[in-house]
Length: 106
Image (cartoon, rainbow, N blue to C red; front, side, top):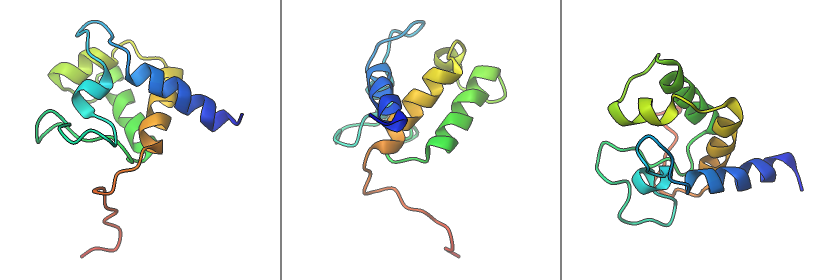
């Protein structure tokens, strides 16, 4: 099994696990590629299909206090680099037909 698949499998488990301090799992707010009712509100981003490096950088910023959000700052404050790599590999591996790359769009 390749390293990428190991990250994705660990990330899927992590994304579906309720964690303190909010006792919520990532997918409860952000959904997966098959959730038609998620994300939970219009300002909560759908993470499926996003570039894993963008997601990792965002989580690192929440963890390190360089980016603030009432819920995400709490959820990310104790994340390890490995947990971030795993969960972002998982969300990056999901299909999202609504996600569009705006490169070259004027």
